[in-house]
Image 1 (cartoon, rainbow, N blue to C red):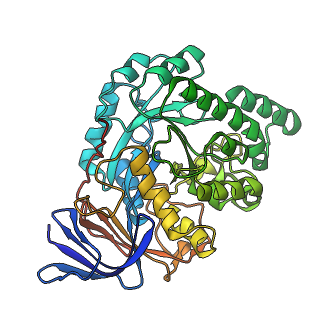
Image 2 (image 1 turned 90 degrees about the vertical axis):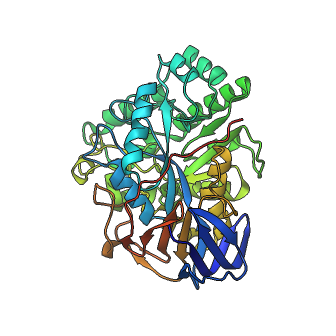
Length: 444
């Protein structure tokens, strides 16, 4: 691999922005900052652009194995590169579900052949695989995923004894989907009594309600406090849930939270125009919840911003509300959507980097990634804050072929994405199909 020097960049790293150069050698960051001689190396002029550590997306559904008509590891990792995402952690609700050691190893084997971004995989929890969780090879799992509410894939864990066993004994971070299923079922019954089989999509945040989220999230936090568990609550959607988490930056937090890009960008006023295209679990909720989540990112109650990328076909999403599946394709445009908050003054670019790169690396103890540090793997995103991206005029790389951001013109552009020092994406062109690497974790 040739050496590369990125010149004249606005380097965003660890709370600072410094103009200078960065050099790559043998896949790793060789030098950061200052003026670097590029003689004998490939030179890339980054003038006017931010150079960021690549986004580490701690929540994606790439649909393989079992649902390859929606997406594959190859197609969705390619879309991720176009969005400046260099590493991802993939969920277990596929077919077969990733709930055994063999299924976990199979996903690694698949990704090693075709994934263009670095990869990690969750081991899924069920009501009856506690012994598998206890004996998992920690080098193969980024964490244990517990569905504490029914969502896509029928992996609900609702046995209290099983939950106690998981929270008291797992050696890994527990990542939870928190919605209370009995509450959701009761709300849905009320909606059916009122609307019959033609429930409007605007009822989605009322069915998957604030109370359903809080009841489950508070249960998870209570379990974690009782057992001293390392808990990460995924995709918060409500102002009420924020009260469960501590503000401020503390690298030793045992209980952390995540928000997803679409819950920061959309609110329930968008159902009128986007319909089932923005149906997801947990639901997109009120403007007041959206604003509270933005505040939670800024005050530290929310540690990580992710995507929950979950593609479905156009035909599936065109069904009536009750039949339309939940989930959106997001990896290609999530970072650009976060930059809209930067342009609007709601976030700083330093905050976006903290929540999309530094914090995921810290929370999951990802080895030698997530920062622009000498000796770390060169996972880099070159982002131009002054060039636009017209969504409808550019290809959608996710296999499903659509995006909830249709019609938008973003005020930023992904110019280039490097993975392990290799230029993979260059302003609309894919430069390599070299498979990436499995994420490694420091768990001593």
